[in-house]
Length: 283
Image (cartoon, rainbow, N blue to C red):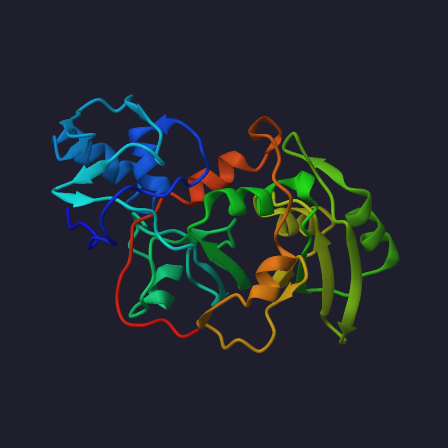
């Protein structure tokens, strides 16, 4: 396993004050994914406060424990907040078992620490995808209780009527799961198809496609154009950039007790990815 370069020496900075398992600590500090961490620990390559540990259940305070991997002190990465204009046809994952192209192909050659998607866009969807190595920030953005809205432009294969739009906004139960659009309106219409603007304040799997399929409409294109008040704008397809301080502030949601964060599970899954290093990333 190739390890990322050392980011410095000395005590690690305290990321959130929590005592966590050693694999999670390595992940939260941006050193590697939990899966990689487990392999490193099992191989006896990790020392905590001077002692080799092979136990995956070892619990540490990342802000106080001195963690060393192969003689490299592990320190907290700088926090990175990105937006990517995801092209259609890419999967939102680091490693795909089917060897399909992924969103990480758009980040090749960029000098970035370990970053992962904040939520997901399916392979056929495109548009605004946030990425970060700040797990707590990602969890707050994903939490439905934070009420961070996502705005989509959706092309469908037919002309919508008021009944269709009302059904989307009234919601329905599909496969035992309640799905609803906060709002749905017509952007423009032709003779055979139309573009809708759909706003969600939750992020369930393939939510818009499932809703529209239930009312008899096929999605031809699905583009996310806004998260919170952060807009995709004119960012070229396949390009990525750092959020401005103003954009990042628009998505800063007040912290909540961990027990109230319903987005924790998705956020943690999406942030278990590998580190990446390369040339300078434009500011």
